[in-house]
Amino acid sequence: MANLWKSAKNAWSLLLSLQRFILIIITQPHRYTTPLSLTSISPPSPDLTQCLSHLTFSLHSSLPAGQHFCQSCFCCGIQLTVIWLLIMSVQFCLALLALSSLTAASDPGCEELLKILEDRSKLHGKWIYYAGVSATEGINYLKSIQSSWIELSPIPDSDDMTLRYGDKIRDGKCVYGSVNATFSGNSTAVTFYYNSTTHEHVGKHLVTCPDCILWTDNSVGSGETKRGRNIYIFTKSGTLDASQLEVFKKQAQCLDFPTDIHFGENKDLCPDEKEAATDVTKENQ
Image (cartoon, rainbow, N blue to C red; front, side, top):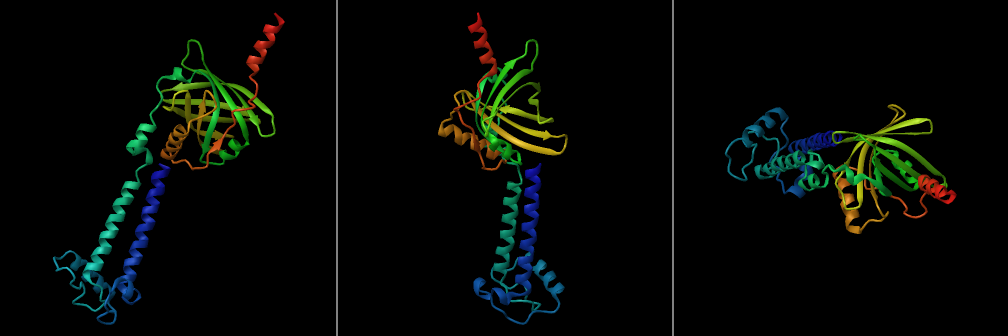
């Protein structure tokens, strides 16, 4: 809806600009004599209303090409062919705007790239954060992350999953957590708790490259105070081929995200506390 509203505003702005441009040409032809090869045949008429009425009548009449639209009034010397080209250019621009007003996701290529992941078992396992984009100030939080990993595990007798994570902040501090990912239809909801604030993320997983998971969401922090829109890609190895990265960029573009991509590191990850605890238990046996 935001993309559609922006396109509509752009269409209205351009339409007003074109309208002003045509009126200037009609009322002040001397300003465009050289670039449009116009010929002034008499001084401007004081009766602009009559002239514009005659213009409307002439454009809907079957006049020979090149005949002046204002033969019966002396408002200007613009040839009908020039005015007709201007009118056609307006129609052409409006046609383009009508097409651009559709969201990018309606593009056939985007439809293929934005398919919902239906097999949730492909989400299971441990993943390393590779790249992310935020359409809001959330990009500042992304830039504070040096590296990150997540692990998704199924909850017995439930459609939901447990999400464990380990984020390394730029100052070298590791932040750990475990939350539930709740599935409802094609939507997934996850609520994180940090800095005494809840951050609710509601989004969906999209089909992506093998050994990758792609997640896009809308987030709300501090109730209604901060809102965000994000897209992330995680991989098993923490790396991504150049061709797969281009696909991710196209997916982000289809969802109208900015081009400022934040990349994580696949080295010096926070140690997995669960794995460390398991190793200690084995050593004590």
